[in-house]
Each structure stands twice: as C-alpha cells, then as structure tokens.
Length: 164
Image 1: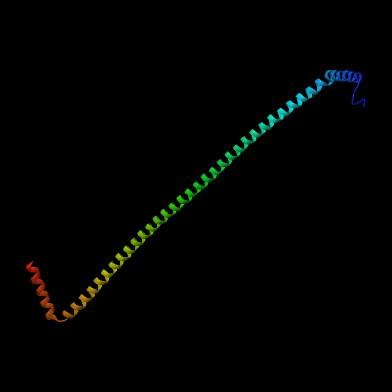
Image 2: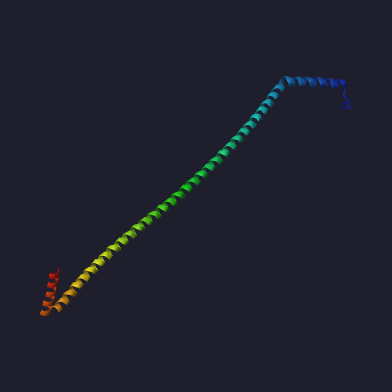
C-alpha cells in the first residue's frame, strides 16, 4: 500500500532523480538526438525532392520518348508516301514509254505496209505493161500477117501524120 500512497520523501527523491536525469539527458543526449532528428528530417526531405525530381525527369523522358516515337511514325509515313509516289511515277513513265514504243511500232508497220503496197502496185503495173505489150504484139502480128493490112495501116498512119 505504500506504493499506492507514496510518501513525501519518495516523491521528493523521485522528482530530484527525474530532474537530474532530465538535466543529464538535456546536457548530453538532447542535442545529439535533435541533430539526428534534424538530419533525418533533412535526409527525408532531400529524398522526397530527389524522388520528385526523378518523377519529373521520368515524365520528361516519357514525353521525349513519345515525341521521338511520333517523329519516327511521321518519318515512316513520309517514306511510305514517297515510295508510293515513286512507284506511281515509275508506272506512269513505263506506261508512257510503252505507249510511245507502241506508236513507233504502229508507225513503222504502217510505213512498211505502204512500202509493200507501193512495191506491189509497181509490180502490178509492170506486169500490166508487159501483158499489154505482149497482147499488142500478138494482135499486131495477127492483124499484120497479110500484106494488104500492113499497107492500109501504113497509109492510115501517114494520113494522120500529114494531117497534123
């Protein structure tokens, strides 16, 4: 029961002991504890600021990565567009060249046909002339076989010459 109802001497000595302990702690432990707490607080604040900086840097890197990705996509699209345009240009040039070659071939064929037609027409004329000469010579031989016919033909020609 003494502990439940402490004596004044006990309270006095407990208070003195507590004050001495408080003085010793304040004199020797309080400053190091406060400096440790202050250092720890500064360390935590520094870590938080570094984490915030790292977060900002990560955001920056992420935005840079997105920008680089967008630029790469745009570059790819540009290259594909240029390739399509080049393909279309090459196809158009090939079509134009094929049309030109076709026109040249048609013109050459027409020229060859005209030359062969002209040659055939010359040959037909030559054949017609030869046939006409052959026919005329046969007719003349037949009609001029008699002497009377020769004399009458000569006189007709002489009269025509004299008339002119």
